[in-house]
Length: 400
Image (tube, rainbow, N blue to C red):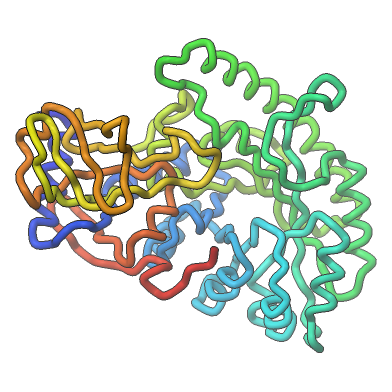
């Protein structure tokens, strides 16, 4: 029996009393992935990206381990909810226009002490000030560095279009503005190198593309390490009390951790290891989060139909954004239909061994987005469900 077949047998036994659709997290795999992130971080603390987990119980589990420290959130409303729930170090990774949220933040000393907001434009400071509604608490601020690689005099850009702040001078200028402005304190710098951390460099069946990606990423790491160090020097000259410099992402943990200028690493998807992380040479994780759909039809030889399953991930549309049939091995989508809103036909010889109400296990393309489809995650240890914990959705929290 292969390791994957053994996992399928465990998951089927553990959930035999439960009807699909359902979602699980294999805690042994989850914990092993956490260990791997810490190993690659080389002693630097890992800040957990909450959007990649979207389950308070699992956030608490990973933060209870030595080496993990703080959360990286994705909306201001989520940040405030997490802070009210007892998480005392929450870095909002994206700028916000939530005026009611800023009024709440500026009026509550506990929230203001726990949450750090992201800024890359003076207009964002103006918005916060206009939203204070009498609140006088000092707002903790982090500046975001644009990590994109620019070639041929800027005519070619590789990387996500995030912050407009690219040069040390630009970040130092905004740092001076924050330092001069009452009601704000600059505490950190963040830089997410998505073109390194979020792009696999071993694409199956594409050796030339994979080599080109590796060359690009090597060049991007060299350029960013030099520029990030210069940015940190420039900003520390303005704000010597800077508390943290955050960088990384699951796919680049060990590379970012090697930079002296970086004080902490961000990661989250590496805990669940969705399918987009299958194409990396830098690490190998264990799939920990899966969902099951029940067989509801057997249309013919070599085909079964499962209920639902059409859960595409965000990003540029393409086959890599679709969930992948994982267990039993050997199933594939019908290219004429793909995964459907209500039903999904699956082709392959394993279909002939599947009966009505058997489970087919899938992996989502991305990590936390799976939790937008399910209210509960069933936690599996060995071949037993040991707990059922709510996702954000299960707690009535849908932030985006």
